[in-house]
Length: 323
Figure (spheres, rainbow, N blue to C red):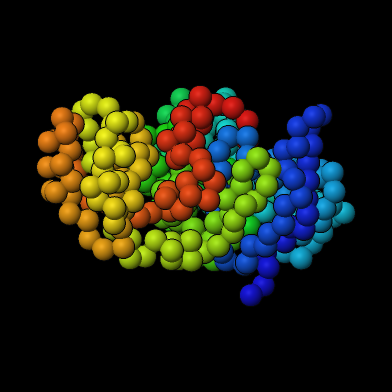
């Protein structure tokens, strides 16, 4: 397969902080590649280096075979960028913002107006085309920012946290649009802290923690070790601290853990009898509010490989902060 992006041992330090520590990876043409990690992992710094907003301290980067370190302007003609925060003009209308972005990429007036109208229709923003960008909702702003990033039909699209901070309906629509872009052949480099989003959209995923890539693989291969696993999660109304040892002694064939406060998880290579465990817990004075079987997911893989809980990642992002 032809490589759309190739990164060899790039690193970036800010004063005493090593934001990216000699990472290497490739993205194939037409692939939707996920970059998954918590705040401060180095996701945005990596995108900034690849898109020319930051220069690596050392290493080699190529986009479409073009060396980004020596021919960055040439490489930038191939890419579209959707930053984690909008870079559009609040005083301009949605239509004028898109036309302005198209002009920056050299599209002729007639062509850029037609392309702007096409994208406004695609993203469901036709009715808001003449409204100032500052009056848009968060979801609408995100859609227009993505539309601006693809106005020139780039070969490679960089999406930095595309669904953060928007409502559920808008996030669902954006994921659908991202999927359609992928199906059309656009190479997409997606950073996200939403594990379920990465699992749903991506072909391959790189886990990055503290500036280092610790694992890269396809979704299928990442989930392979969990095939055949059976998991039951039991939510309790009171504490579960003192009961874990008793459970392990009563059911030695099961692996017990407490992934969240007041939650017990039982795992085995064969079906888990939830009713028996609930009966045991209630007999020990634990009040059970819910017991359900769950399918192992990419979240389980991420926690096992990184030791970072997905809930902690989401809380970090809600607080804000750099990446």
